Amino acid sequence: MVQNNPTSFPEAATDFVDRRQSSGQSAPPAYERRQFGNTYDNLTPDARELALAIDSYKLRNHRRFVTYEEMLFVVKSLGYAKVTEEATA
Image (cartoon, rainbow, N blue to C red; front, side, top):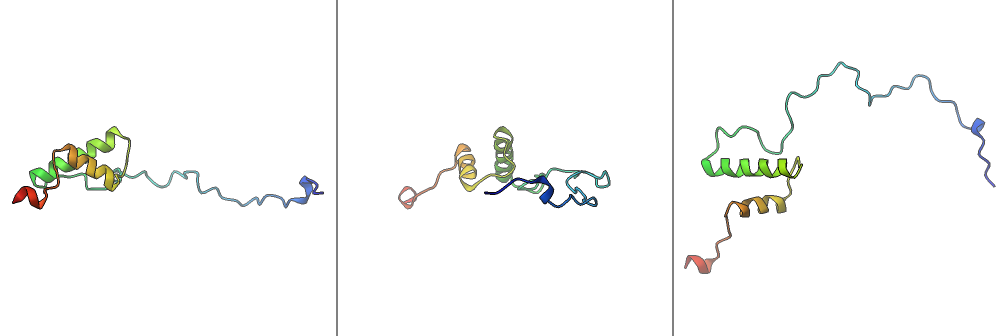
C-alpha cells in the first residue's frame, strides 16, 4: 500500500522563474495577426470583395483563421458557382 507522505517530496526550488507572467519589458503587438493582409489597396475589385467578405465572416463567427470549407461557404455566398463543361457548351 502506498502512503502519502508530504515529507517525501523534494522541496520546491526557490529560484523558479514563472515566464508566463509579463515582466513589463515587452510591448504587446501593435497589430492583430491575420491570415490575409489587412490592406486591400493592391487588389482587384473582385478580390477586395472576397477579402472583405472573409473578414466579415471571421468577425461574425469569432474566427481568427478560416478553413477551406468556410472559405468555400463565403465564395458561394457571394454568388460564385462551379461551371461545368455542359453549361459552357
